[in-house]
Length: 400
Ligand SMILES: O=C(O)CCC(=O)C(=O)O
Ligand SMILES: [Fe+2]
Image 1 (tube, protein in one colour):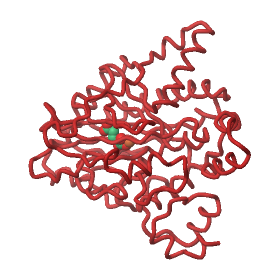
Image 2 (image 1 turned 180 degrees about the vertical axis):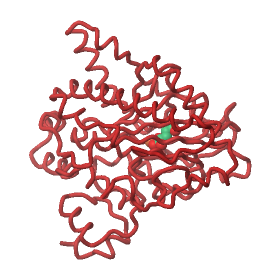
Image 3 (image 1 turned 135 degrees about the vertical axis):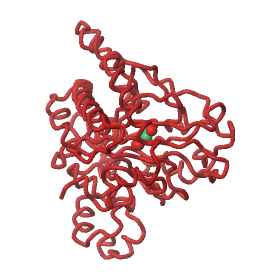
Image 4 (image 1 turned 90 degrees about the vertical axis):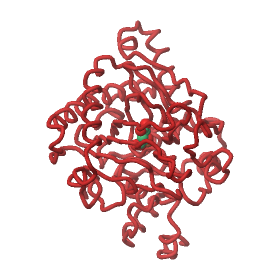
């Protein structure tokens, strides 16, 4: 099965929404609390400044050239800081001045495109929502009461049906896709070095063929918008790693380990980098996918729109996400044998593709999975948080 062509409500493969029912596992506590407790997982509001996140996450900024050119001992230290940033905060920034020109072109093209009348953009809509344009209201996070307030243009690998306006759109996006694939491969080499793994275990199958680009236009809030509707509801990314340029209008927020929402910003000429569920599985949770969302920050930005170009790097569908031995040793070193066994149940030996399908079922994006699909995924230790209707339909499988 092709991974990017599921019939779904939303472009698949990108985000894991927080589950509507809190997960039982202790390691998911922060997420489940976030869902249950409105004071730490507040509904968004567009009222000026009402929920403005003024506190910045202060994500660390790295220069990959510094790492590359550093003498051995300093390189070791820089790699440690780089990996610890991903492990402890989940988001870092990397300097990318050579990409400034293409990022400018991408932003210009997408601004022109999204400013077109809706009827025009709808010509680029595809019924399976897995590529091209999607209008507002197409994507609702599981458990959320309102759809994300955004329009998107989704560019899967080998995309060919480019919009006519602006004429350079396709060429610009293809160039951006290639540049960011190269950068993702480079970043993964540093991740491998941090994990003390051979490069091929980590960066090998990051390839243009699996990487996806999502252009997002978040319209300026209007006074008639429902106060609970946000630009993008809280989620974790499903892929291996995500790269995105900082935007003029802020709005990206991460959920910290001590359960606070903080704003994610980075200097111009850099890219923000966060990691997704594929890397979480491969590292047995050593580098976890961090919960994040996008919402208008209020204040002087209250009535401003936002444009964002998000690049999702992924491994090949057949790659095994069985946790790497060294990562397992590190993360479980202080656990008892029993704790270790329980902990590792959440990271079974599954492929990228199996993980993706199970997540899409959990999110409701594949609403009617077959009995065979459910049985196989459940037997592999996936579908740990199945939607209620799936449990009811296949209760014998879940009770066995
Ligand atoms: O627009 C952004 O800043 C991030 C969007 C995002 O998290 C996503 O599309 O997965
Ligand atoms: Fe995301």
